[in-house]
Image (cartoon, rainbow, N blue to C red):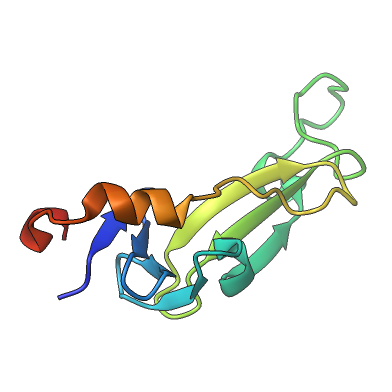
Length: 117
């Protein structure tokens, strides 16, 4: 049995294969040495689809698509939403999780695999 560690609500790392894994459907999203987002489906949403401005109110707090975009990341197998980012247009995708696999593996050496699934 593989040693998997939950990293976020829907995202695990399999220490034996060194892969990001969707913990809902067990789909492998790619190498844990890279960004998990590279293995996800990305929906670049118009913020006005989420927060509609109030007509005639210039201060309705609805995000302006010229200033903000919502990037939603989904598992390509089961469709669970893994992450959402709010970024200015043109900003590169954020590298939000970087795991020291060597140190993580070392911390789990000799431990009971059953307690980490």
